[in-house]
Length: 412
Image (tube, rainbow, N blue to C red; front, side, top):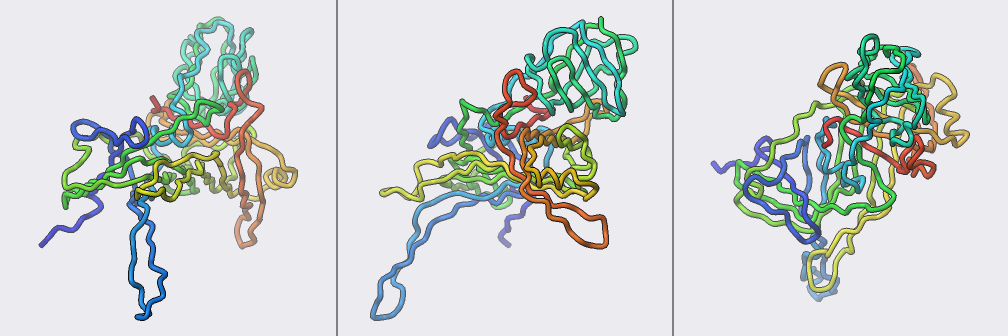
């Protein structure tokens, strides 16, 4: 009996191209296997039927037209799992870490719960480049303050001289007078939508059906949209919409020895925290958002059956929260058209003090509704939102001049 393709024998690998029309080099140790729940990327064609009115009263012809590639690579959010695609959706590669360098003028003071403040007598955390929502690590504390070393913490408030931290392990800050040589540095790396110098990335993506020896290589692919869904239970999921120009088929694997899939832990929305306007929000029951690149193709040019390119548009970021109706806060954000910041951080693996994590910072959000349900249970608000560019951000401020930034402990 002839073999029938099965999903578990299908692999998906990719490699970034040097530019449009230049398929990535295959063979040997090239390419990268990608983690997936499923990939629906496939060839599409425009089709045309004849409009002639014939004596036979039948259609005489049907033709194929412009080729294109489209579909979605779906997965579960994992630490370091999708660095390249996230860079592409933001149109910027990850940037260097931010650090204070060694400081001897910093004091630590516990405040409430897992929060505390770092206060410096001179210099500026803002000038150093730290931003609200950054996850940082500290080293150099001695004696009574040594418990703050090598514990990841998220910045929940920030001024030039005071950095307010919430520790991810849930334990209190260890208070300490100044004098120790302390270094604070962001963990992993970040990418965000920049105000200039945006990149244009193209990928070659292969579906290899190993049990029937069929290769489908999709070329000139762009990541046109990223969708993140964080339910109250279950794994957080991520979808990447793909647009491409053409396909090449074969009976041998194009990326014959791709690098292994990333191994970072899978993340769930219940592991981590959400900050709205700098405050921990413990009443959000769901958080979903999309980053859309608004890409388009010409839809055909005379003399060839593929488009010459795929063109980027302006980036939109939209989403929706569901919130337990506890007070007027979220409702009035909508009623009063109040702009807020939102930080979503999910953790997985590692240790309690240094967990693997992925975080998303939306520094300027406006809500577009606050509809309430009405059932025999705790009532919720459905709060759609749009994230927009934080034009009051940039160097020397607590925000980036961006719509969204992404930080991951495994970005490199």
